[in-house]
Image (tube, rainbow, N blue to C red; front, side, top):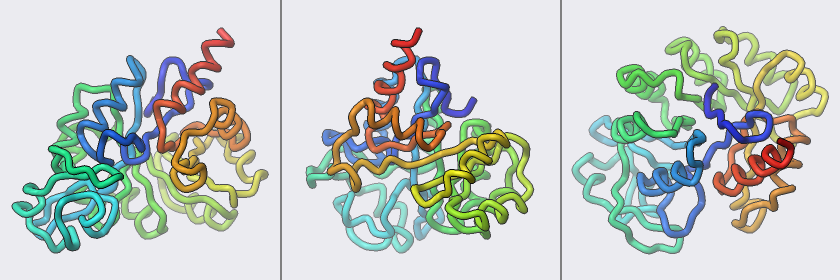
Length: 264
């Protein structure tokens, strides 16, 4: 099962948003991914990454359209050459320069090949086909979940590769009906819900055995701090989640796993 763990309550998958919000490490860095995976022990963590294309056509991990906030460089990533990007170094949230470089997508796929890490792909530019071609070359389709927020991209991913998990933002009945119209293999459809999603729709999705995913967003909604253990458990219970996206995946994993162990 994608992102499944052996101890987490009801097999809830934990996703680290950009790898996790941990001060010693820059976001979306190899060192961060390694540290987060190590904290999960033998369990599997899923890491959410953002992909953008350079001037030379290579795919890199970068959330913002510019490299200004997270690196020693400046400018739009799509306007920068690979040579320029590879020379930059990543910064922590407080601005400290590290020895970490911007990872390429190919590098990350190689890095996770023998580790307890799966990936959630937030593809910022319309380069879904290119990204999925790389995934296929690495034979990792069964370890990928692709985020989409527009029907055109949802359809594009479905037409390109039926082996990856595919999510769509579902906040209304209309959004779900649109997603249902897109051909997706059984078991590969993920509903990405928010506080706006009607409770009756969530219940119906559960009845239809559609997996449900939601974001905790601790950085923006909880002062940049993890929730309490009960906070994570309540979130999962109230929204009937299968997949939980967290800025603090280690704490979420411990909270949900602790409850599971206590019941055993």
